[in-house]
Image (cartoon, rainbow, N blue to C red):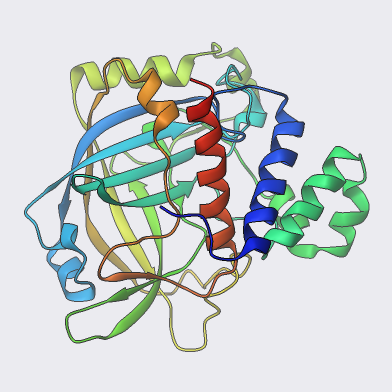
Length: 306
């Protein structure tokens, strides 16, 4: 996972990391967002349809080991699970394809992102720090929609739906490209708490519930792809495709256990928004390279702090 070949993107991503750290406060060794989380192990079993869409290796094996991480949104490592500011929740999935070979899905429990570009996101963060978010939102309707979108607290990490906001492109054996966005759907169904019920929960209720659930049974999600049609915008995370678009089942993500003694590994692992694997290519979404570079910069800082 390299830094960008563009000095301007490296600078922009570094500025974004610094601004996020300003908002969350200094927490060396932790992510500037999604600081509190839990690392899990499991397996991915592909559907037959996945192999027809892409030559990606995990779509052509009987199963692939995975690492997954549920998280709360902010950069505060001790944010209570019942704090509304911990929404939306995050889910990152790593498909372990070999020694230092992998590809990731990075998703959140909201299909919204406040801006189309990294430059606009930096403006958004600076406005928030300066207490001038109102004027920014007034001039940026997509950011306003993102801020105002419902972000309810889930009853469980395992009873939430997660969206990857950036489009990708599958490439199959015939060279055909298919634009898509990932969604991760719980087989147990979606269950949210209203504000009053969430307030009554304990500060660690999501992490405790997850540990109790996995002590008894594995938990499964369906990994699906929402397929773009000709003319759909694929380079703007703010533009949502209609719900009528075809959704293809890619397989089952089975979470089997919380990874033991994983506190250090959780801080070391750097998830990557760019697929970097045969059969899956990034779209022209300008956020992808900025996000990947920012993740690497903050990841290197975390590693240096331990």
